Image (cartoon, rainbow, N blue to C red; front, top):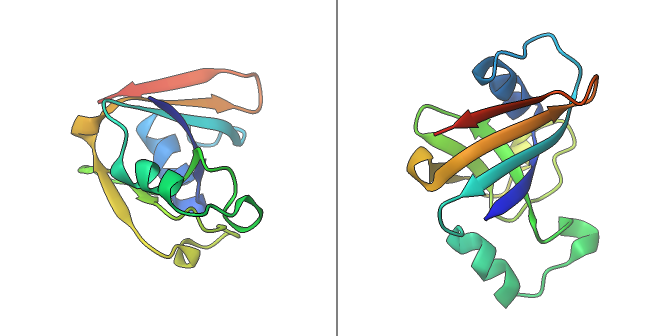
Length: 115
């Protein structure tokens, strides 16, 4: 499954380093393709999801990128410039990630990292 991510400032910096895009224009689209749907995405559909406060039900808040995988906030609380706004942190191991792609704002150039 291909999913759009909303990266925190820290995650954006880590993604730039991972994909060798340091010093480039802002990232406009970050997408992750999963081998299997993370459980928290299934759980979202089972509870009342408030789009006004939590955003798009299909968008994930990407908090960090580590050697073990990507860290997301499964509740996708707003990230107004601070990682401390996240309510929960969930690790999605690289084994569950098929690809991670970003599109840069400057020329629409795309960088991809496959796990």
